[in-house]
Image (cartoon, rainbow, N blue to C red; front, side, top):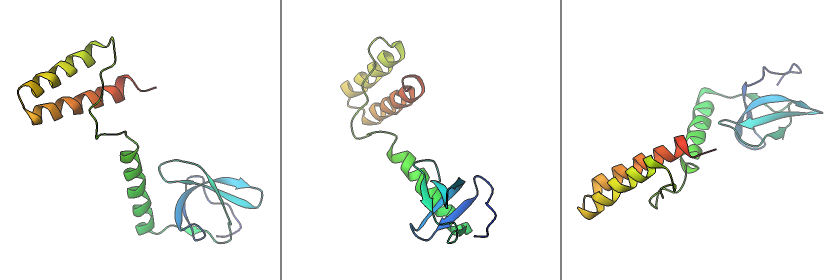
Length: 124
């Protein structure tokens, strides 16, 4: 990398870590990079950094998308309704009716709707 600092947000490849990061700023002799998609910054030697290739940028974006999916929560267990929430109660009722009718597809649909409702209405 040249002596001039890159533009904030520029995607750079750090050979020391083998990762692509978004340039944040300088901190003393180091360049500060943040993982694509967010996360904890790390220090990198500015002399070894280079612009990320299209393939490296794509790979970093896919990794970030996969991390978001993994961190979306445990989908192996059915979501629980929030006490006192009318929509949660309604969706839980749909799920229970589907279970009673042995309709696995409708039960899964109700779980998906309940998870979506949780993420929109009950997450800080």
